[in-house]
Structure formats: C-alpha cells, structure tokens
Image (cartoon, rainbow, N blue to C red; front, top):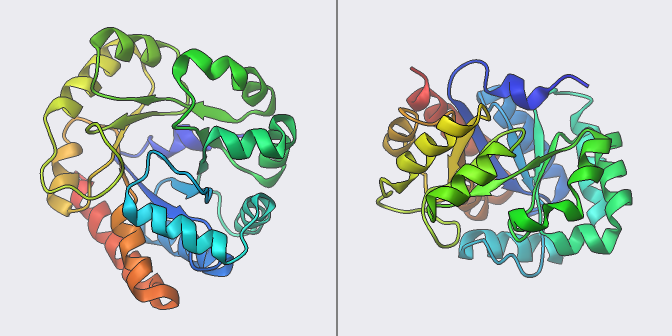
Length: 258
C-alpha cells in the first residue's frame, strides 16, 4: 500500500476536515467526503459515533447522538470506506475510542479496516503508555496508529513524538473539541519541541475554525484539523450541507496555502 498519509503532507500545509459518520445518514457522509476531497482537503478524519465521546465538545457529542439514532453500526464504517475507495484515494483516518474497537474485537476491527482501505486510527482515550494494546496489531495490518500530544510536560511531548507514526495530532489547548475565539501560543511551542525530536508531520486541532486561525497555525504546523465548525454546518443544513461544507473547505485551504 502506498503511504497515503505521507503524501497528504508532501504538498504544503495539509487541511484535515473531520466528519462524524452517519450524521444525519451514511449516504450524506459519503457525499461530504468526496466533496471535501474535490474542494482541496488533503486527508479526512472519519469520526466513529460513540455514546461516551469524552474528548468531544457538545457539537460533536450531538452529532454522535444523531448518528447512533439513525442506526449506525461499526460495520457501516467499513462499507462506507469501501465505497469511498471506488472514487478517491484521499487518506482516511478513523477517530474512535477504545471501547468500540474492543467490543468489535481488535483483530477483526483492524482486519476490516485494512480490507476497506482505512489508513490510520486515532484513539483519544488510549494513553501512549498503553498503546501496546493495539500498536503491533496495527503495524501488522498496515494501519498507522496516530498519537496525540497535548501542551503538558516537555518530556512527554518528546517521548511521544519520538515513537510517532503517520502524523502527530497536536491538541492546541487542554479540554474538549469545539470552536475557540483565541488559541494559546502553547501549540507553537509544542510543535517546535515535537519537530526537534521527530520527522513525523505535526497537525494541530481543537478549536480552529476561522481562516485567520488557520493561516496563523500554518506558519508553524504541517497541517490543521477542523471538526466542530464543519459539524455545525451539517447540523444546521442537514442534507443541504454539501455545498456549504465544500465552500468552507475551499476557504480554509486557500487560507493555509502559502
């Protein structure tokens, strides 16, 4: 398999949108991913709906609730990915929690992910110290296990960075996901530490939602991740959200392209 994730960061600052699968239904998710790819997205995060998404703010929590109410099941992630792979080779990374992976059975989940064409996995509630639970299995299937770093201790950022793969998900500030008016300077310092200790691309997420914020983050990071702003559009416009989301992606991509 070609390293699609590596390719996503090869042409300048990567724009990485997040979308909750099956909010409000799985067919719209498919349309949105393809539209975002056409609009300039470099990699897409597919959020696996979960009943207790502890890292998510209210916008994505409500999206998860709507998706689960629509009847979403874990196998729908894999059928969605298989359909997408018929039309696009954009990197696809699943954002999930450890409970759904464990419940589905780890080896079965990863085997299905590989067969469907997923490139990576982000598990916010799996601490770095416990990645041994799944990392070897991911490697065996060619699935990148994406590590997250937060602005806490310098030594922890160094340790996680040195053992990272795919890309580093750099959390801009402590707390849950959601749009923020101001982003602290801690993200820049954290990225600088990570880059001094690893060649893994650094993508910053949590709070980014305006072109101005994206442009600022692009001065020091390899990518920006946006979720809540996109899910807000979907919550407001439902099945009529494709054009608006595409326009937003184009605007953000233009802002970070230098």
